[in-house]
Amino acid sequence: MKKAFGPLAALVGVMFVAAPFVVANAPYESTMGLVQKIFYFHVPSWFAMFTAIGICGVASLYHLFKNSPKADRLAEAAGELAVLFGLMGLVTGPLWGRKSWGVWWQWDAKLTIALLLEMTFISGILVRKYGGPGSDKLAAAVGIFGLAVTPFVYEAVNIWRTIHPLTSVVPTLSAAMAGPFWFCVSAFMLLLVVLLTLRVNLGARQAALDELYLAQED
Amino acid sequence: MFFRTAWLVLRKDIAIEAKSFEVLTTTLFFAVACVLIFAFAFVKEGRPVEDAAAGILWIAIAFSGTLALGRTFERERYGETLRALLLAPAPRAALYVGKLLGMLALLAIAEALLAPMVALMFQAALFSRPLLLVGLLAGGTLGFCAVGTLFAAMLVRARSRDVLLPILLYPIIIPVIIAGVRGTAALLSTPPDDATAIMWLGILGAFDTVFLTLSLWTFEPLMTE
Amino acid sequence: MYLRRLLIALTSLMLCASPAFAVQTGVGQGGFVPVDSVPLADQLPAAPLLITAYAFVWIAVMVYLFSIWRRLNKVEADMRALAQKMPQR
Image (cartoon, rainbow over all chains, first blue to last red; front, side, top):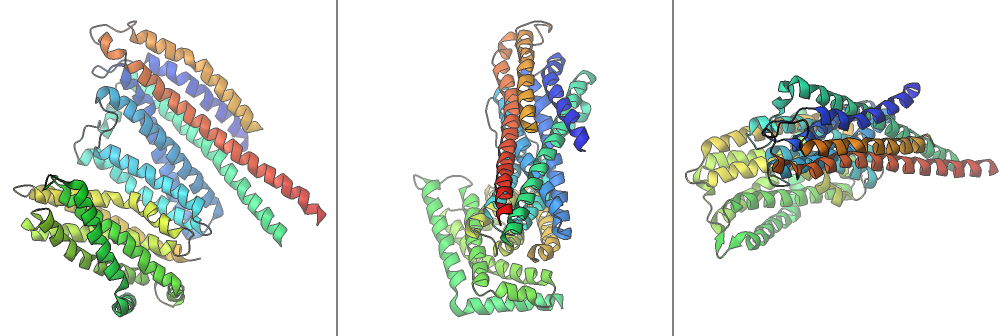
């Protein structure tokens, strides 16, 4: 993993630099025009967020039942990244909505619950920061419940007919749009892997430091 | 054994509460105060804003429920009784169920007061479909208390637990509150929109199932130190 | 240290990417696309929104990398300080 990290990070950098060129060459969507191209960053950021939530939830479960500090660090890192990618989705979304809906924010089901999900994972960070000893288990519970609520978010637009485009849009993309789209998705996923590795490494160093402190106190 | 333990925990809570009625009276008073504060915000020229009654009812329930959760578990912490309970050779999930039933009973009393009060003060036709209203209240309260009891129990040994309880609880519980508010608002329209209310009742049922299952499953490892 | 180099590399890469945005607006003002399918007036306000969205993603990643780098530096500094104290005992 360590050997692969450098090239992987470089690849992500190159992909993100190439992404605007790739997207610029994608065809225009007929009704929304240029602003529709936010789609190529907006949807992948949600994909990355849901992946991070999945990792966080599963790692939290593992930590809860097996008491593994390693899984806890993974959950901590994934929780932070869920917030980061969620923030990207929540910022790029209104920029798109401003043009195509005429308002920055719409209180429809998808947006509301996406915001709630973001808040859930922020609360996970807060509890780690201010909860004192034992807060890792608390944060694990937040991660598990966050994962449990996620399917509701994904299905929200399909249950309530709202202003937000359906999630079934993705499989029906035309070939010329699908190429750039999946390019961006893979760039975001690789970015997630790179950031996750960095964050887990930071967590491991912090744990090592705590151990040193303990050893010194004895 | 399981239900006996749950019943014993519930009976213990009721016995303690019956001595002073501390949590019950403070919760009820707080709920009424909530309704009054929102009345000032949502009554314009003597007429309440449309659908405001549904929102006010559920916000009062959520706020006073949080207060009651905090108080109930603060009492357990003060006497170190939760630790003693956890040391007892009883299934942990049964302890959870006992505490949950206590919270449900408390909030049921609060709702029995709140619902007629909101209906009277906001001229809301809450009782046009009494069965649906009871269903929505029961579903919403169960979802709220299922997560609330779990989190309040976990937070007993955490720092700054007073702030953390609403911070952790609300983002997860708001979908339940939304379902409760929208379902209740559907009852308020003339004529009552039964189909919409039933749809929201179904969604509440789904949330309750997920939250209750998860809580029962994770209570044991969460309470292990 | 490795992280700092990564940060610098990413920043310079981002600067390299900026011409793409220039291309983007150029297209918007009527290049390769039939004018009737994309009315000009619709596009002018769209470009800044699009660029803001892309720039935000970049900036968010940068800020996050910076925060990791800072936290890591702090941990390493604490570790060095501790290691210096240890042998004296």
